[in-house]
Length: 275
Image (cartoon, rainbow, N blue to C red; front, side, top):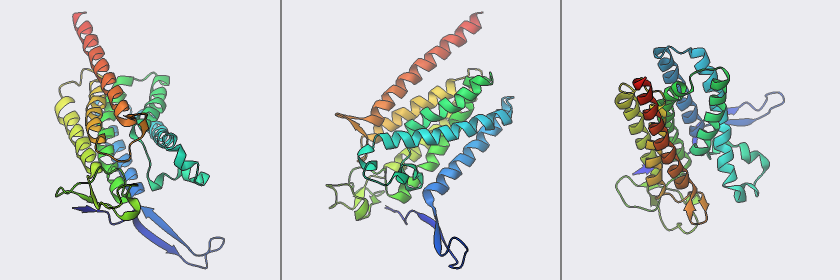
């Protein structure tokens, strides 16, 4: 059984006699710690792979810096837009309160690829190679970041009594589920799936398809989308458009993009070989 110890990793109470500040408590949240850790590990892995591929780590880090900013903005905007009914009733500052949770991976991918990709194109760098470098970092980053949902008691599934069930405290239970204590830990399912995707990319596909730029990235998009589509069916907090879950619709689009991208890369490689 899983049970969150709470969202706060560390609290520091400042002395009451500090000038201009007075007594206050600074709290470090697990969500922020995990997101920061995921970013740091992802950047380190990407920089190391850039050197192996003969790319400038400085260019990679600049593109990654812009992609991270674009990803965070995109992830938050995506989440807020699909929860406007809630945020309309809240103080304006809650729109940027990412430390409370609420980052949507599909929005993050869109924002990150746009920001980082535009920089790469502007610098006339090999876009597909850079996307391949980023793909494993995205997968391992998601695997780590999902544990922030555990500490915040969010992104869980329908009630269950399985041995790996997740306890959710009463304030975090959705309307209509107050009588249930244990739910599917869908954060864990996605974390394990992302870890498996990372392993497939790094040890399965990367050694075989290093000469086909783009293969790793489109494989990541397809594999992640397949897992997310299945896991999303269990979740209680999905965004909806009519009778459809938005993340599942996005996953279907992701699979289509992956299939089209891999087919294009295969034809491109065959044409180059023929020439």
